[in-house]
Amino acid sequence: MGKFYIDGGKRLEGTLRVQGGKNAVLPILAATVLNGNISYIHDCPQILDVLTMISILERIGCNVKWEGKTLIVDSSTVSSYEVPEDLVREMRSSIILLGSVLGRYKRVIISYPGGCPLGPRPIDLHLKALRQLGVQIKEERGFIICEASKLTGAKIHLDFPSVGATENIMLAASLAEGTTVIYNAAKEPEIKDLQDFLNGMGAKISGASTDVIYIEGVKTLGKVEHKVIPDRIVTGTYLAAAAITGGEIELTNVEPNHIQAITSKLREIGCTLIEKENNIYLKAPKQLRSVDIVRTQPYPGFPTDMQAQMMALLTIASGTSIITETVFESRFKHAEELMRMGADITIEGRTAIVKGVNELTGTAVHAKDLRGGAALIMAGLVAQGSTVVEGAKHIERGYEEIDKNLQLLGASIRKIN
Ligand SMILES: CC(=O)N[C@H]1[C@@H](OP(=O)(O)OP(=O)(O)OC[C@H]2O[C@@H](n3ccc(=O)[nH]c3=O)[C@H](O)[C@@H]2O)O[C@H](CO)[C@@H](O)[C@@H]1O
Ligand SMILES: C=C(OP(=O)(O)O)C(=O)O
Image 1 (spheres, rainbow, N blue to C red):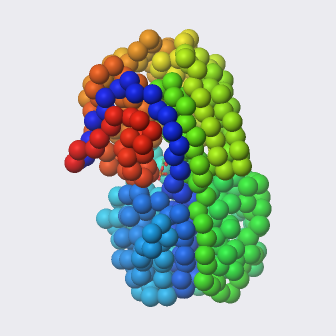
Image 2: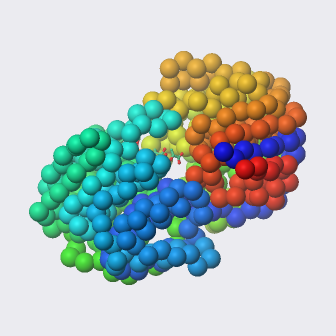
């Protein structure tokens, strides 16, 4: 497995363009199954999760090709409604194909995605909602077998504003008979991007970005061309990486409105930020300050996908910070690795108490998940001496060329396979 070697102590400086969003493009790629036609997806990030999703699309019969950063998917040739088990096991978010394959074929067989390093991630809300649209669901030997003679619009109230469940309902309901209303829907920017993509195909969806979404079923969907929104978590990660090194950077291809929860915390710890329409500038203070509380919540709250990177920052801030993870049951695996580098962190259930230390020391650490891995790279950038972050493939699930991008900003980092 690949690893990153980092020599700490280099201040990040310069300008970087942010990639298209992973969590935006994955449901969009799933949605390409629906139109039985061609989808042009601009600014598609070349990350492992996208490559896995492409493999799934190809295995069910789509033709997929890259033209620069544009991905072209032709789903007119889809020949299977069985989502390959080995690839579903590789990427949990492939469960998003449940809604799109069902929408197109009124049937789908997909394996249970199982747990993940963040703790159990059930899909009960997805299945409950699909049943309300008229789907018969059997669960057999780890497989979910769904069938419907037709999909019928329904009023669906989600017990929790699940991102994946909201997306699966939008996908399945786009070609249903009648109107579906989702109450307590997820409000993440990626939901709006999916709405825009589906509407580009001819769907009739409104309300995304609010907690009530309306999907008026249509009979057919057609060709679509779409640019993926910038990745707000990658934006936050590079800002935090600059902040931990005492650096000064400008990021382009940014949507400042999508990252207010992150920028407000970065300001609290002492960073100067200037937002322009699609750019953001950050200058770090000489000494970072602690924050009273970081509490992860569904959007527009502080994103759980930035919790690990925020923890890395706070390990060298002056004072004590409290981080509470409310979205996932078990998302502190990075804390023990940060402690191996000298961080002072105490975990009490879903809360982490981070006491700032003067410095971190480089050592060998393991990335166990995507964002935890990014946090370890950040810690390596500021640590005394050399850090080896093993488990590069977790990080490459979501970050396009993180080593090259950080090198551009002046970091000493290289990847060894
Ligand atoms: C590909 C993608 O977009 N992934 C994101 C998506 O994941 P994902 O769509 O899996 O996240 P959800 O919003 O569905 O899950 C949030 C919480 O709800 C629970 N839950 C969810 C569904 C369900 O049927 N039952 C249930 O109990 C989960 O276990 C978790 O504790 O949103 C998460 C929360 O912002 C992000 O961290 C992920 O990066
Ligand atoms: C948890 C994440 O992704 P996924 O839902 O794909 O595991 C993430 O992007 O941090």
